Length: 429
Ligand code: HEC
Ligand code: HEC
Ligand code: HEC
Ligand code: HEC
Ligand code: HEC
Image (cartoon, rainbow, N blue to C red; front, side, top):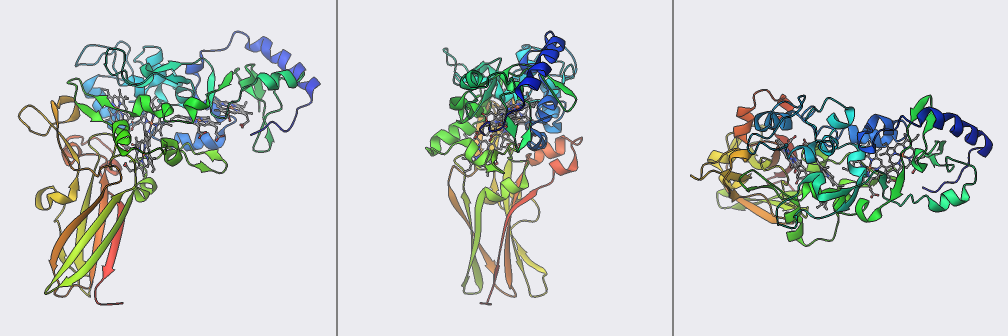
């Protein structure tokens, strides 16, 4: 957005002088600034972010992460916690509570900027992506893969040099957002807005980071467990797909003239509904119906990507004219009676037995849909009485074994989510 309007320069200068006196000593490091500060002016983006998993990413907020964090590390409200596996500062925080990791603390309730997890400044102070492998080939995870800045990093390049040269006495640069006059703290001086004192939040343009996958990869490329087993590999999957389309074009679409900060994934039903092309074809074949269920992964990453316990499954049901079920591909979960319909990754121990991520010694079978893969699952069902065949595709955040294990989790995180459905009537045009 340009800077079309100007405050009255004289008035602004007086205000600035009065303010800088009271603010001169009050500024805190930028990575400790709470999202509540940004909310004063960036209300719409704040609302989108606060409903996102980034805002829930710390062990203070996300019940699934908290369950693992407590068993692999300990309390998120105590200082001096170390990972049980290696007795070191918990690697989790570099991605799940980056501002706390920057201060090497484990007491996440000490500051809002810690418990807020991946908050505004966590992303907007990433300056340069160094890559996920360090010089010795070891993984550097989360913020340790970045050079970090003490200024807000901005996508369009709010490089303020020219503006400072031309704004004359106007310390606010005359910035306006959405038509409303808003003072601009990004010139680096404290401002007052609607009775709130806002610290100076100096800014610089950094499109190379903010408009590319570099803004995501430090946390989303890949991650290993303590035994070196790959747990998440969205970045590797993406490279395999050889796409040029970046993460933000899907995950931060422009809506209402701004980059949407809802950043939906597996917790977002609408995002899931768009992730797959799903259809059924039904062909009579003697006294049988040949049913093909076709699934196309629309992403340049695996479906489902991310945490290794994400999984999807297909269910096919045939109904008679009264709407009664006459045939179904599975009684409940297909892992037992229709294994082809269950798409998931297994992690196993040395004996090849499936185990939770922290204990895994190697990856087991992986039946998730590859980037852009189309898969057809075929069924032959007795035709007698069938007038409708229906297919349903479900998404689960957790493996069934973890659903059983984590009894404390809220119900809605354990329920399958309907991500796609298709129906075919038989014998009617
Ligand atoms: C007092 C009001 C105010 C507060 C508080 C505020 N900003 Fe801004 N911000 C602005 C104005 C004004 C602009 C420039 C006009 C626009 O793009 O809306 C801006 C622009 C931005 C931009 C976009 C620059 C670009 O390249 O387009 C980013 C990023 C940003 N702010 C981040 C933040 C973050 C992060 C915080 C909290 C740490 C924050 N802002 C707090 C007023 C504010
Ligand atoms: C997960 C990382 C991440 C988080 C968290 C995040 N941002 Fe952003 N933000 C980005 C990226 C990447 C862009 C650039 C998108 C683009 O330009 O395509 C951006 C763009 C912006 C813009 C410019 C929007 C536009 O289209 O003009 C503003 C303003 C902004 N962010 C403010 C905030 C505020 C305020 C918060 C917290 C409430 C926040 N951001 C949280 C990554 C993040
Ligand atoms: C500082 C680390 C960090 C950065 C940078 C980051 N993320 Fe995330 N992201 C996370 C963490 C941690 C979570 C998981 C929160 C949870 O479930 O506890 C997450 C969650 C997500 C989710 C939602 C997953 C779900 O379960 O629903 C999406 C989508 C996502 N990020 C995309 C992005 C994109 C796109 C970018 C780049 C613009 C980005 N992230 C930048 C750390 C980061
Ligand atoms: C073509 C659009 C598209 C692109 C490009 C894309 N994604 Fe996704 N992404 C999706 C959809 C749709 C989902 C939901 C289905 C799923 O979980 O696979 C998703 C899911 C996710 C999740 C959620 C995982 C979880 O555990 O819930 C993360 C994280 C993610 N993407 C990160 C990325 C990153 C990082 C990039 C860039 C390297 C990227 N995505 C590129 C569309 C896209
Ligand atoms: C390299 C960054 C990174 C590190 C290190 C990391 N995580 Fe994550 N974690 C993520 C991202 C990104 C997501 C969400 C998107 C996805 O599924 O890929 C996530 C998701 C999760 C989830 C699923 C949350 C949900 O809501 O379903 C759990 C549980 C989890 N992490 C636990 C941990 C624990 C415990 C540690 C430390 C031992 C840890 N993570 C270390 C990046 C990381």
